[in-house]
Image 1 (cartoon, rainbow, N blue to C red):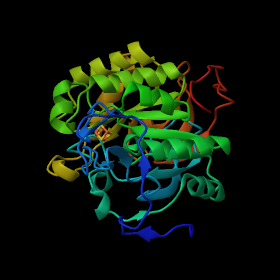
Image 2: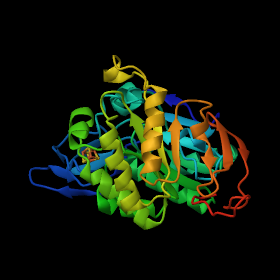
Image 3: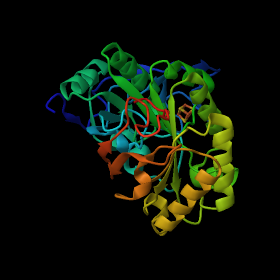
Image 4: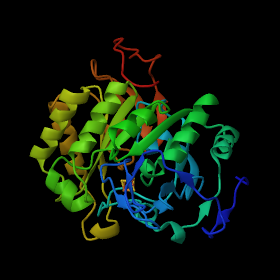
Length: 349
Ligand code: SF4
């Protein structure tokens, strides 16, 4: 795009930005209050995410203004299916993550050391300038874990809104309530990766716990911002039909039957290279479980051309949005309604 250049040197670049949510302790230590890990960070050290560093008793986000990923993609790739279908988004990420998912599909940046991944130097103003130049309709924070580059995301999102752009975040949902509420003021849509529905799965596969993520999902819904949920189905690890049924019932009872839920196909990656790709039949079974539990918008993902990528009217069953992979082939919605029976579909259309 000609507005930036790669940079390999962390030493002579922008100094980062002081974090917003942390507490000063004794002996120069600080406690980060951004995610449920609540790391206590000693002078000169970094938190678990690898990008929040204690410098002289103050906590700094060292990747502020230093994205390692920037590009333009369809919103369907998120996947967001009920958020302005077919629009182009600017995607943005820095290195770092709060989780340690053994099946991570973006481990090259989420689990990387900051100094080992090339990055660009782009201020929030420059990011928004790129977005406007590229004529995208939204900016999406994604790929690694946007929570860890919170201050950068917040400043970009705020500025994006001032320029008429929409904003979205794709996240694990591992974030404390106070920073989340603040962040939601500058986001339009949030997609949460609900990776499984047992404590055991989260502990063993992601080194995290489930309850804070469920709290995040409820908080996003309550805020009125658009919410979608994705579940990457990993064969033999989170594909127990009983757990899937419990998850779908929880979603319906806590955030409503109109919340879109995507079951996506796993491909062997990172520390689970020996696990085979998810059989399509497993995804179809998950779809059936979710529909039987009363969810109205259920999708199968990472299976290009599968009919369960389409959006159907929950009342008359007619296909309203046809997709092929990440492309929208046809959108028959009239404003937000079904042209056949008049049913209003939930989403940001
Ligand atoms: S954001 Fe990073 S430093 Fe802060 S608590 Fe979470 S893992 Fe620790």
